[in-house]
Every structure is written in structure tokens, then in C-alpha cells.
Image (cartoon, rainbow, N blue to C red; front, side, top):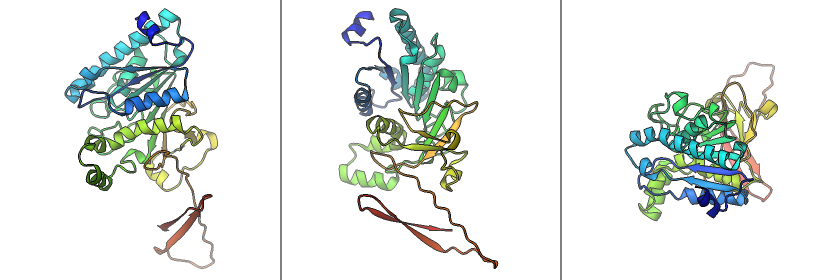
Length: 321
């Protein structure tokens, strides 16, 4: 309603962020919602931040909530079209951010608006029932002028993976290969349970899935320390150090300040991160060339590389050829 937006001090000339949550067990907003809203305002103080409330629909049995994403997307699209018509609000100022099921609701919304929204960011879009779904019912590159996606929990078979495994944006970034994230392994979970009890056990279960949100928040708060992702065909090739190049748009920032590079096909990118904020790490590539006139046989000879930082910190990294 017009009066509702007026009471919220809606700024007709600023960016608008629309945040769409995912499936919920409790029927309440999760702790990441105010953290993301706060980070958006810190980065863009004059912006409008709108949080979509579909908690009742999102608390149903998962397949039911997954089906509701179409209705949620339709409602969001109607609201965006209404803003454009009432205020002549330019849709190139609209940025949708959807987490899990919310990412697919954002995709549906983008596909239904009369004009394309500027950007959709998918934060580990949900996998079950969407891995093989038609592009019209899930997030896809056609849903906005630019679609970027973070995949942080893509383990297991495609139809059982918590996060969708296949690329669904213009740029799809797979931090730490897209599987378990640092600090989210079983050993870490048991340690935290021992320290804090079972109060936050639900947080431990969804640690990797929700890491996509915190990586995006990190990109808002640590503007001077952007995490860099590298284009690569597979995570195995990235692990071998074959893709650490920035030539011809082969690297890009993760998160808010991603460079908008659109290609004819999805671009898959990879990077390593830390276990907590700030998540940025530096990627080092070491090349060793052996020269000799005689034939040599390969042995599992261990090597040790010592890294020294500017703050007198150091770390030894062992590897075997």
C-alpha cells in the first residue's frame, strides 16, 4: 500500500533490496535475516530493504513449501510491478536476494515481472525437487539482467543435495568446491556441542547451507578485502592449481561487488575461504620444474613450503609430488 511505503520512508530514487528467506522449521525468521539487513544498510545507507514474509507457507512439509515458491514468486512480481507503476520506479534499481527455496521464489518473480529486474543473487538455491526442474519454475539466467549464485552445500547425489548442484546463473561460484565449508565438519560440530550444548544444534546442521549468506554479508562488510573466485571447469582442476588466472575475465569478486560478466553459457568459479569472517584467503600457485639429462623415476618425496606474512606470522605447508 502507498501509505505503508510512506511510513517506511521508502526512497524512490535509491536501490531496493528484496530479501526472500527459505524453508523454516520454527516458523520464525532465522538469525541471519537481521544480520543481512543490517549489512545491506551499512553498505548502502540510503537503500530500501524489504524482507518477504512467507513464513507460514515456508513451514510446511518441504515438498509443499517447495511448490509454494511459485505463489511467493508471483506475489513478489506483482509487488515489484506495482512499485514500478505507482512511482515510475526503475527496475534496474531492484536486487533480489533469495536463500535456499527463496532463491527459486526470486527466480519465479524475476521471470514474471513486466520488465526485468537488475539482479538476482541466489544464496545456495535449494536442490531437492529443483535439480531437474524446468527453468520457469526455478532460478535461471533468464530471470534478471544479471544472476549470480553461491553454492555452498552441494554434497551427495543431485536429487538429494541440500543445495542445487548445477549452475543456474550467469556466474555460479562454488566456495571450497561447494561441499562442506570450513568449520562445518563433524569434528567441529561435536566440539561446539561440547562447548555450548544442543542450543544451536540446528545451526550446526545447516552450517554449510547458510554459509552462502554469511559469505555475501562478508562481501558487504569487508569491501577492502573481496574474496576472489577463479573460473574452472571442475573443482578437481581447481584443486590441482590449474585455474589461478585472471586473464580474459577468468577471475571475479565473490558477493556484492561481483563484476557483471555475461557469457553464452554458465560460468563456474571456485575459491578457498577461511572458517570465519573475514573469509578471504590468498591463493598461491607453486610451479616446480625438474631438469636433467638422465632418466629419473618419480618418488613420493615430501616437500615443505614456508609462508611468511607481513605481521610476522608463518605457516608450513607440506605436500607430496
